[in-house]
Image (cartoon, rainbow, N blue to C red; front, side, top):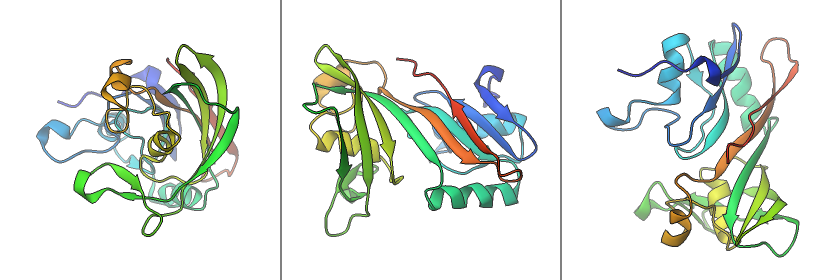
Length: 212
């Protein structure tokens, strides 16, 4: 039995959209197999049967997600994501100390077919991917950073931080065993999401404080 989403995790709901806070280590959409049917989409559907996913967060990533409740709203918001009209801000804790205060990673990504669902940098076949980053706080052999993805490739933030030599702590795909062991969850959180309401076209912004 798939549980319904908790009231505390519903940030906003009207006739067109529902905005939620996805927990870490929860799928965005169903996976293959009976044991992978529990996901944020199905939990939202318990309360909002017409809910459709517009975008996804990785299984270990927590934070803000929007789902559409009508076909027209789904189309409207999907276009905003495709045309990069949404604004997303993430927070992460990465291994080690970055030498500069900010920068941008511009490295193309594609699926690592031999190790799916992992992604990899590939300058021949990869799709363009850019991530702005900024140091927020220096920690003990770690750094708290803010991440602003320009593109929305799968695992983009995780691979780009690995590329810098500072994998996200707790990342079972891209960090070393020692870096994974430093956290019980991956320390990546979708903190802010801004987009235009599909009917009123009012710019909406939703924030969930980083839980780590």
